[in-house]
Image 1 (cartoon, rainbow over the protein chains, first blue to last red):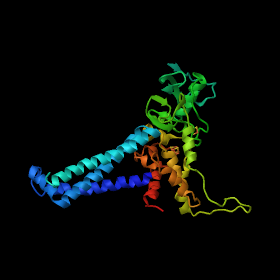
Image 2: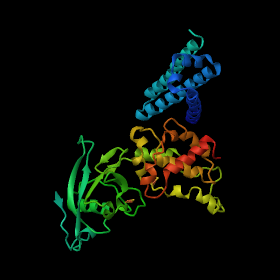
Image 3: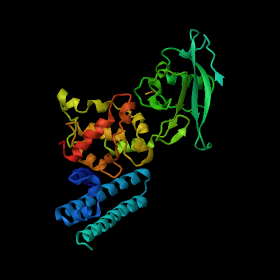
Image 4: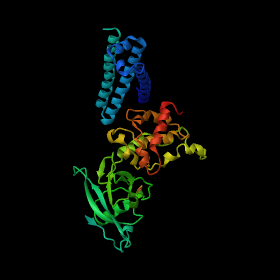
Length: 113
Length: 256
Ligand code: SF4
Ligand code: FES
């Protein structure tokens, strides 16, 4: 993939995450903050489908943005064909693992497993 | 510490009898073939109001230590040869007056982010090869000079688009100040990126596609974090940081 395409995704995911995390924080304000962190309130969020979808989107956006940021830091730190290939594939694997694990949590909480 | 004593007979401007002030010049000495670390040698040198850092280095070279390796040519900020770190900041030695340093101690070191050849002389091989890679010339199918000496006229506004960026003297100070270049040895660097913009912004040029392809690389334009130190140290007011942002506009679709 061309670097400009990757960086457009990087900027896009940052903007998307800022908007969704802001909505997520605003939702905390609908009730008392400590109350919003109670077990029942958190589980209720997962049971509300649009909210669960938003959490999933935040997870994807932050994973992609975060791991691409890590990739950039790592390739600026050290260079070499093999090393850079390992960093690229490692970061793709990192995104996949993090999204899979986070999605599992969202699904399990959503379906009350 | 070695000292230069002013003598009337010397033709060197530093050594005229009216000399009143003196500074300590600390020169970083390093030979990668024999030394493991750089050492500083100190000299006491007389200075005038107009004395430049290059003047005192050459005075030391002439009178005290001929082994000091330093690159220079024009002595008027035109050739880009005498870039070095002066009191920690990349600058042209011939363009930096002692009086503007506000210090009695002048420390000169080789530029960062370049391999050291010896003392203050650094290796520009990679610098020039990256510059060349970006095709720093007008690309078009028809030649500018034909049998009847054809011209490609430009309006002052069209010239304005790139003029500032054409002042680059390839001194390397911007690359030396760049924090990305300090860790990413494959980074294209502010100098070459600014030159890519210089030619892309020139309406006589048709090489935009080629150059954008070269800079749109994992060690290309996106590795600039806009620290802006390149523009701060540029002695010719080129502003490579701005050139890089304008260049990004093409890749993000803000500029055509
Ligand atoms: S852009 Fe400025 S600092 Fe960089 S090489 Fe050109 S003249 Fe020197
Ligand atoms: S000697 Fe030419 S720029 Fe300094």
